[in-house]
Amino acid sequence: MASTIRVRAIANGDTTEVQALIQHPMDSGFVKDAQGQLIPAHFIQQLTFEHNGKGVFIADWGPAVAKDPYVKFAFKGAAKGDELKISWVDNKGASDSTRAKIQ
Amino acid sequence: MTRVLLIASLVIAAAAPARAASEADFKAAYAAAEAAEQEAGGLRNQWITTETTLSAAKTAAEKGDFDAAIASAKEAEALAKASIFQAASEKERWRDAVIH
Amino acid sequence: MRGRFVPALFLALISAALAAGVIVQAATAGETPNPAADAKAFRDFYVKKFPNVKLEDFVNGPYSLNEDMRRQWQEKEEFPPYEFALESGKEMFATPFKNGKTYADCFENGGIGVRQNFPYFDVKQGEVVTLELALNRCRAANGEAPLSYVKDDMASLTAYMAYTSRGKPFDIRIPDDPRALAAYENGKRYFYTRRGQLNFSCASCHVQSPGERLRAEILAPALGILNAMPIYRSEWAGMGTISRRFITCNSQTRAVPEEAQSENYRDLEYFLSYVSNGLPISGPGARP
Image (cartoon, rainbow over all chains, first blue to last red; front, side, top):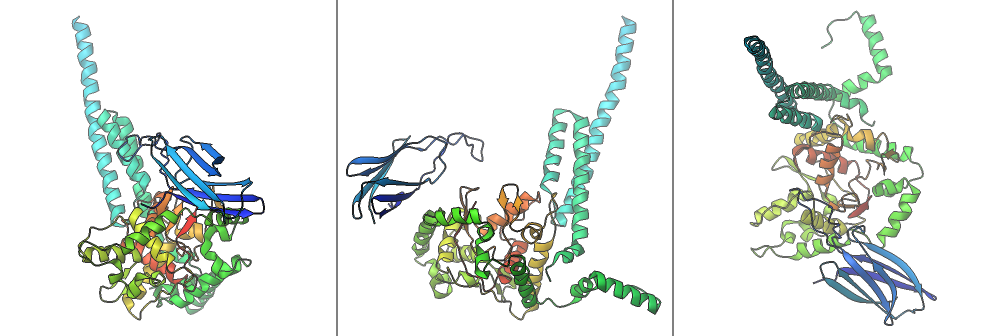
């Protein structure tokens, strides 16, 4: 099955800019469906970007983050060709991860 | 006691026809509103507001609040008539807006 | 129709009416429609109203008219929200039906790079065929259940087909057939007709006020408005098709919408696409 994580990391000198788009319903648990039933909360609780085994961006998320979240950030200390590992875990215990090369 | 009973029966007698008239009045008002909305439907020009006002009328009637129900039914009829007027007027007026 | 007038009075009335432009309208009512002239006038109107916008840029809707929104949109396009639907559409398009055939069998060129030809007027059936309608007819012809016209799979499929046509100019034809002309005119009538309790026509927002705000939104110009469809709308937190947009626009003016792919909606799509001939397909798109 295709990964839920799309990522692009571009090195610009010492700074690497990372963009990621993650496919996830991010249901807050407050929304009702057409029948009036609450759609249970289903959202990513932790999102981690690792470089050389060290976390460079760790997010603790809650129901306020919208569906199919998009993340953009920059960090120092990586170079072109290095590998970035991205993983997430949600409140139902599901997870996904992927690796991407810094361009 | 007889006097109380007499007064009570007079009050009930007075109240009863008034309530029955309200329901009949409501049915008439609702029928008129529905007929207008059907006409608007034939012109493919119904308004959402007319539909919601009609349901509000029905809900009020089911609860027994005929005064509110009649008011809503009359409002729905007015809305439906306005939508019919809009359809008739727009039949030619739309040309005024065309970019030349 | 008017009865008999004293010639002098009649002449005076005519000149007054001409001055008011009213006679032009009455004459147009009886004349044969001239779509080519309409399309030119449509284009000229927007080019004149927004002289700093390049013609092909109108397909970007509000982003062509608002710098701040444009910047945010360009950033988003690096990782567009419609990407998932696009991928899913590509996969769906290639997946055979239960009978072994695929969508490619229903379309010219296997359905690749053909979006700009829709809608077209089917002279045999005497009706306008949109891409969405064609897709469901393809499914029906191959024993598959129809898709909902407003989102999900239909949006994914049309997203993929639009993507294969990106950059190609709209090429809508009106055959020399009075029924096709009538369908075009009906779409045009629908576009300019006020409806709903709010008494708006499509033109009220998209001709009168493009670039201006309606509540928190910047209104898009009608020129090129379908070129980016289907769209991922942040408001919907998902994809929506042309059918979805027509239906929701109707409800927003508090008009009871028609059913998806109704004759009026298909004729409307025909008109809007035709007057945008020459402008490039930019779908799938992203909007606020």
